[in-house]
Length: 258
Length: 347
Image 1 (cartoon, one colour):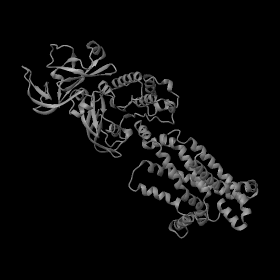
Image 2: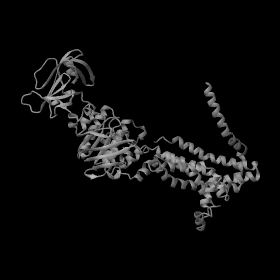
Image 3: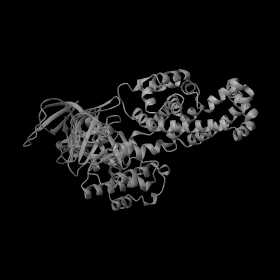
Image 4: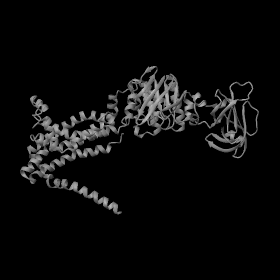
């Protein structure tokens, strides 16, 4: 084997080991205990349920609002498109506690929007709504970015042909582009959901209670130490594997039809 | 009818500039031009897929320049078919079709019934083109825009499909505009020919006019004219009783042509099939007779391209293979070439 190949294999193996070892160790040490804990720990069950439904709702909102935006970015040329695209990536690059602070400025009780929502009975801080908005803020750009790429991969001439066959632009999108990009859109939604589930920084600034799994893990670590948090963290890792497996399956089929 | 007037459009960096031509109702128009000349962009601008920058597009006397794509009654078939990959063949064909009976008629006419439930990913390139044609015909468009629609078909299927589409065009009165690289196809199908290069129309008109009377030497060469001779009209030809007879000189060659071209530099275009070769000098009605030497014989399918050196000027004649055999022409052999004054086009 050439020296270059050995070096490449070694470098790849080192990184893989670094990435997998901590997660593997966590599952080995706490996997069985985590599942047992899940059966008898009401607080953990509530945190998991809260995390799951808030992340799901944030993803639904992200898909509903992000799909038209992704279509515009993939199909339309307009002044400032590059700036809009760059701005969409901003939540991904700023530290997430900073994202939480930014959200607090706009949605906190002292802000105009937050004040109005609180008066209407929709408190942001310390409510599931705050968790949903924090998740949406940090994870929706992932969906929009993925959806934009999925739609860009569908040749626009399919839409053109559909329109010459009598479709309006909306019908052509619904009947042709959407089905052809569906795997990519679904994969992007899974990525968004997974990112929302794992969010900690923005949530803990905006909403400490009720607690999502990530916040609960942190609290137990700081309150009871490492031994107590390992089963909780292991349960979270095992659950997080589900969307990742789904994502791989979707990506295997992606591109078959375009 | 398709009327395009002063059309300007952009596709990326490419520009269509001041494109003007008309394809009458029920006629078959052909757009020919080199790769990258804007042929597909032109079809897309007529279909409304590409938004024009200016000018006018009218379909059956209705201004559709700014009309939505689905409001033009225009069918568009791309060279690469663009069948919807998530739908089986039959659903592709019936997509947009208003009359199920027409769908069945088209499927039978193009002999694609056996493909019905197949997934488009399993189709060959030729089969895809047939399905794309069927899909466009099934919606019974007033105007059909075809972008090299027969290019992936084998020769036998191509001939059959041309006839089917030609019959459909006649019986339904559909106006057709087809992009092709194939001059034979253009001559065979086209009532109107539009020659496009670099986003501009070099010449447009009836196919007979464009092929017989190219506007410039470039057009003549592009359209495959075998003899494009640079020279000059030197004056009236000494042909008694023939009005408009002029004498054209190219090198040592003196040619009689019938033309209104004034004295001065120009080009003479003589198509190879107009040049008659014989072993011996023969009395005929042709005004141009030359003795020469065969310099090259090249075979092109059922035809032979024979180059004859006539007083230092190469003259090309197109012959059938039986004629070539009868004359037993070989490089170095003596031969006589003749063509009528009417066969010479000056431009």
